[in-house]
Amino acid sequence: MKPGKDIEDLIAIMARLRTPEIGCPWDLAQNFSTIAPYTIEEAYEVADAIERGDLDDLKDELGDLLLQVVFHARMAEEDDRFAFADVVEAITTKLIRRHPHVFGDVDAADAGAVKANWDQIKVEEKAERAARRRTNGGGAPGGLLSDVPVALPALTRAEKLQKRAGKVGFDWNDPKAVIAKLREEISEIEVELSGNAPTHDRLQDEVGDLLFAVANLARHLKIEPETALRRANAKFVRRFGHIESELSRAGRELGEASLDEMEALWVEAKQRERGP
Image (cartoon, rainbow, N blue to C red; front, side):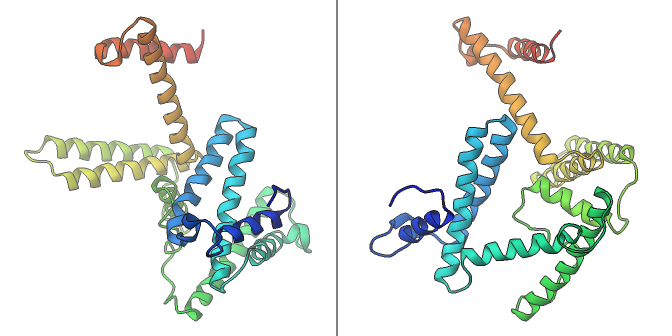
């Protein structure tokens, strides 16, 4: 086989990899559950390339993510459930249905009207999906929050849960109220720590409440919490790298520096980033 630019080339390669006797033992051993973590990882690699502004990497990472779609579709085809073409048909159908102002006769003068139409269509789709699951033996539909995927990163899921609840009025109407909640959660951690024997489970619960409140604050400020945390992680790596490089320049190892010395270099890195 040779590399190609047609999606059929990728589908054929995946089929070969999954063909018994002549395929790849590792690929043949996989199933939906074992591949799912790679799918999530590749989505993060895409986000990372975008964050870094590296379009060459983005091209490669999008290819890796597309492979995940083809992989899952191939396994489903082997199980006589659906094929890649059915995946394409499903998403094209959804896009056309969710854009009646483009492909139909619905008027949408601005982005707000588009979102209102989109939200209404999603409500209808949710009802259809629930009915389909009942037909397929999926049991009775759950509550308002039941279809927010559990496999989402915890901060992202927290934001989506809060947003969903907010649509029916269960929400604060002022970010300052969320800040007050943050202070309350921090205070509860302090109370737990001041006790004679703070338990790991209690502390874990209290820290979880604090993180949930932080995600809520981000939502109220229209900040995507996962993106914000990724930026903070990158900032930490960058500034810690400055500490390492400066100590190395002085012929010293990290373990040889005091906390005060490292803190001074950290502050130096912050000042350099902020500029004059």
